[in-house]
Image (cartoon, rainbow, N blue to C red):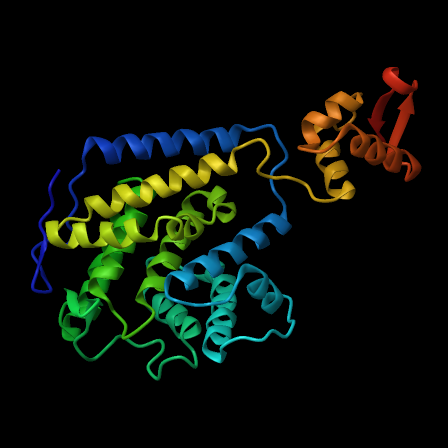
Length: 333
């Protein structure tokens, strides 16, 4: 299916330009299957702590793409209200992003006012017109050359309105729609600054609303691992007048992120309390051995597993039957 393209900032169709090819459809199907595996998995679902860790990765990666110098540890420290040494602008960007990621759960992905509200939070103190569409012409530079000229500023409100109407009414998978919206935000360049981080954040909002698993998949972290390809996909879509190259790129990143999330060792518990909690959720009132516990606890030694189980018994979380190799455990009510 080929939809009409933008031409000099004017749309000839309410739908953004997209050619649905076999690669896009196959990737969307593969991702849907991974989401199905997640939904049907019997393993304990990740907790708030993991959601927090992945949000930190998302923030650090998305800002690093824009040149922010702060490390993952520094972003974590800011989130925990600790003081750090770093460029004032970079610290402000992180603080704003933390507030923005906390705020997105309250937003409607197809409401233009919410789009502006989020930009106001994300860019507060960084640019004078945060939360407002640009009023001047902008271009994207690659070295000393202009690689992309955005549509005229006068067209921006209409283009965003049409884009969100498309997203709201589209019958396509949210996997594909979120990629198209991300690309179009980059293409339209609705703001004087902050367009890249807005595109990535808005895609995360669309995905997490449609598929809760994406609360635990920091797609931005996978983008930065392929940053050159990210910009290359944007350029290819610009040249083709079609978002398909960018959609393919983003779907591949989603596929990688989900595959990692579904890996048995991805949710590696860091403490004995975390490991025992995971085992409790898995075994419930079923009796199990140390070998069974090792399969659930992840990459720990048999000695660590023995210490975990002994701690569970001493805290009366577990009842022990037998001893040594014949020892069997059961979680108490």
